Length: 154
Image 1 (cartoon, rainbow, N blue to C red):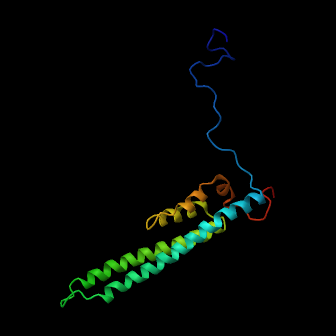
Image 2 (image 1 turned 60 degrees about the vertical axis):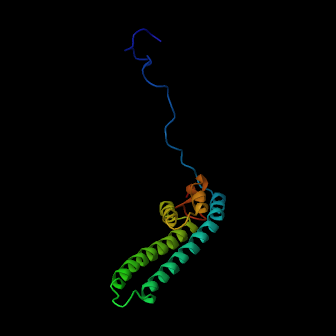
Image 3 (image 1 turned 90 degrees about the vertical axis):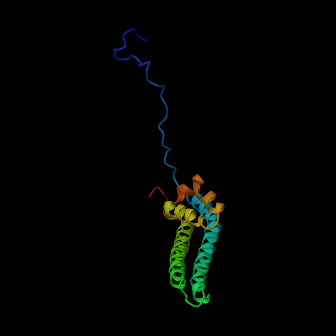
């Protein structure tokens, strides 16, 4: 190294050492990787679908509770109770349908972000770690949104 810090080939002593870029290189998806990813994703997605149907059924059952109970002779709390249970039913029904749809997308390896959102929504009622563990697998994530059965080089 020359003594002149402004020389054309001099190294700057104040810069940190050279590091590789912070991004990951693009992983090419092969048909074998897609088959493995589909096999890994299938049963957790079925579990999410069953769970979504369970959420829809429970929310529909919650809607019937205020109509089956008698709150006294004046029924002052019946209207408020029906409104509250109606809102809870609507939210539960929407969450159940969302969980079913995102599980279907997960089974088809479409929309990794939506599938992850469906798993997070399912955490509200119960903790389902199996779909989350499958989704964070790097091979599974690389296979999402790729055409199935086609070469990635075409």
